[in-house]
Length: 276
Image 1: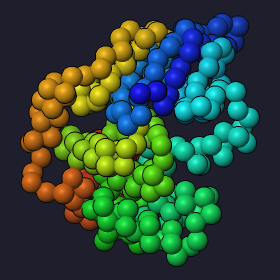
Image 2 (image 1 turned 135 degrees about the horizontal axis):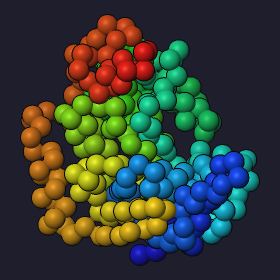
Image 3 (image 1 turned 45 degrees about the vertical axis):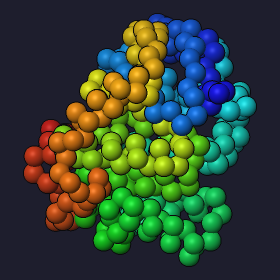
Image 4 (image 1 turned 90 degrees about the horizontal axis):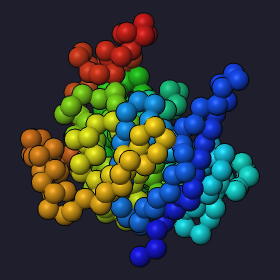
């Protein structure tokens, strides 16, 4: 099977004043179609830089990034924008929902850019939210939903166009433990059902254990690139997910007042620290 993502001798150097900071140093790797791949590493290891390179969000200093037969590292910004709209999806830690739009309208946005008629994209968005257990939240705005619900809207938005590859940057970083497991299980099930290649950056090794492939980055280099065996992967997923209650992985949680987060969630604590 040919890889869907190939990275060849990738190097990324940033200039900080008069200094040069090497974020990635001669990285080469490949990811197969339909694989769930986790990129792990400590803060500052280069894992997020690598994800940005894979998604075409940054240009390499040297080397190549290919998705399928397309060398995205050589594309212009306009070519990249068109390519991302056609083939890629993104899930962000900070949700990145538009606050003035409802859940359904946020999910429908990528469909609008693809030229899908309004009624059809609304129907597709609502159906995708239903799959995430959020049918009753379709008309709610982000401030009327919990952090876990907002992240599931972000997941629905990423999956609604059935892209070939989805990139996720610390997608559960602002969620509590139970919601993290629910959201992660939802993403895995959706990716498997539609044959989507799923690439996730995380610093949590227990979350990485559910992947088909785990790439560890250290000081801008690939420290290890491991294909996880089926038995080990099944055991890791059972350990992570079996503690969840027998319910839909995206079952809605109790509604919260507009603009509020449930007390005690990671997102709520983070916002309080920032003075939000």
